[in-house]
Image (cartoon, rainbow, N blue to C red; front, side, top):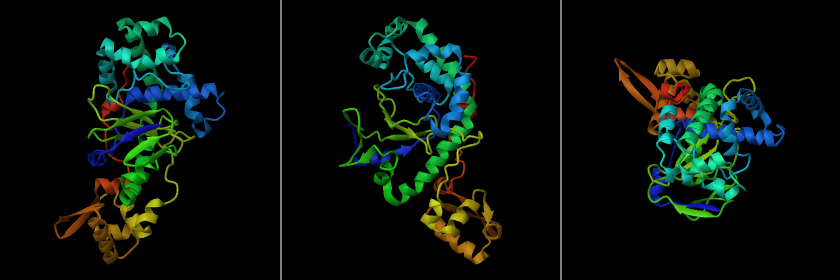
Length: 346
């Protein structure tokens, strides 16, 4: 069992992140491909279309990664890098010390009968072999992950929007218990059945990362050098798929939980305010009276879900960050051009 102990300060510092991690996402996509191949492509469910496309697009130059990432874990953490810019992630990997490479590849020694010679050389700091891994990552990222960036972002953000009401009404304890059936909160700590391991956050908090390229159990990632907080990656629902069968963003709405939480009229008001509106415009959009629109706006403003600014003789309502997440609108977070660029020129 993995157990992560929290202090009150850790709970306060625990938050979601939607920052892309191209190198880690590429490793996750590769593992999903290996799993699908190992199962004969039979039970990848509705995720199969994108996996089949990725299989056809798989570049020959990425084949060395097959020696590192099999269908079953544990996997080496050589690609566990959370830098959002793929070019910067490459430079970070390129600058890795021999000790860091050895630590990242320890699992290859522990769980393989005999790692290939090139992997052993890589663990010894062989720079030529490191460039082989960099090229493999670069080409696989460009072929499989980069074309699905927009739909992956949409799936992760929709997953987050569904979880915000749980956090608002039940707090971190309720939230952490809903991420996966094998995760549970007990005695001021988060537990996951499986590997026998216990650690403490030591005041750093936990970064919770929904992944659209992952369908496995939640995975903890700890930075041995302590430069970043520990990260918990979990499969964005449903099924962690980055796109639906027709290539559009996954429909993660499910039942109208927002209406169940705040009421159908206020849910409609929140959704109408995905673009700022005056009270009259809001009333017309939701088909209620201006007086009713003003009353609902006050209640939502008191809950920090919307903000109201005076403009001339009238007012204009808009969503706060919390209101945006609850309304399920696109969140303008970490979607910079750097997260979309190709790394083929590196």
